[in-house]
Image (cartoon, rainbow, N blue to C red):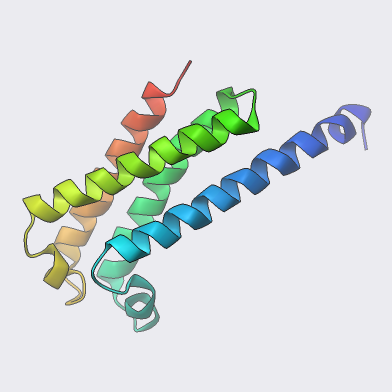
Length: 134
């Protein structure tokens, strides 16, 4: 292995580990904020639940990836990861009020609201990532 790869491997592993922990924490919080059980719905074949959860995860991962690319500390990554998670949760709550039937539509397998929620999550994540460029 080239020397450069060996010297940067610890930083890669540290940033990757913090990002995975942030993703797991976001997923845990998100799954507890939504009133339906996405994982059970996904296991049962509910496409709407899979679409909406995938959008939320990607919407969170976009700003986290951007912070990794531009951050020089793990603490900065962790702090901005928390900000990204809060922004995604706020986006979900706004959508919940915008589409009052969302709590019934996702468990019922209605894909139109799920796709819209996923696109809003991705859009917010993309804007969030752009705002975190420093």
